[in-house]
Image (cartoon, rainbow, N blue to C red; front, side, top):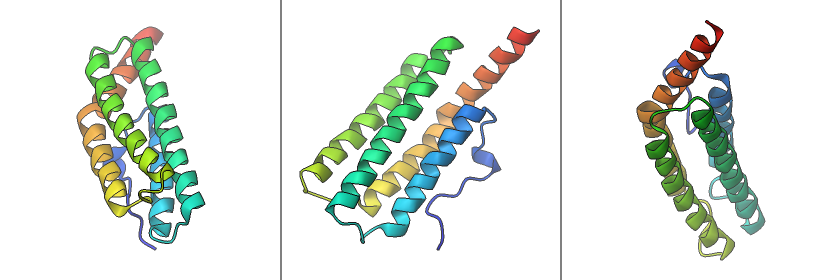
Length: 138
């Protein structure tokens, strides 16, 4: 079975907390992808809840690091998180109301957002965290 998302060295930001949470998200999306179209109502609910919970936890930990390290791009980065999270939440409501199940379109949306966000924002953010830690030890 091919993975829907594959992380390469290019997606590694070298900040363990972020990299580990990114790997967990990729693993979850790949697990859902392997079952797409075969999920019953309860499984759709379980997986959408796992996605929402993981994204919330990841965004919270990233935002806490941004505050801790006084990241200059905090507000715009948080706004991007909020927009994406709210989009995922509104999709989860549709799943709960049985108006849809988890779709390939949703997974594609997550994949596209993930790679764009990682390239445009998370790499800069992680670089700032690493530099901040290095300056604290000097």
